Image (tube, rainbow, N blue to C red):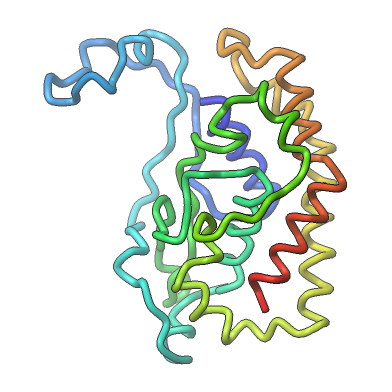
Length: 226
């Protein structure tokens, strides 16, 4: 739940579409018998993470190939897909990969726009005490959104020339700077009973705002965009 709240605020600062959220309390009586054991009692009668339904959105898996410019033009601000992929590498989000899971589409001015959902597996899947070990970025084949066949088709029309890449780098570091400035306020939005202690906040902050790692992330982004 901590990951979801943090990523929501971080995505907003990156100007990436993501559903609105709220802290909610569900009564135990709402549990249906067919929900199964994964719906643990500890999720009920306490503050929990809630994500608002984004009306009209649908799974991107219905559109898994870009064969030409006609397909490319179906997407509004197609570079948003690239930015979501860059964001995922930055926060080490394992909830989205080449299979395009946890990525939705919605209609926007007659075309399709991208909507990022579900970030529970960010920051080493919440194993914050391990973040110290990952102060460098290591590329893993077939683990990132930007290694999908969808992006390989999309990037042919992005015109990733030197000027575009320069602007991307400028935006990247501007987003990181904005997030670093707002991070203390984000941490205050997380209920104390969730256990996001000052120590854990420092571990996440040091991970996100590590200059060396962030340069490595962007270098991989450049490689995947070209």
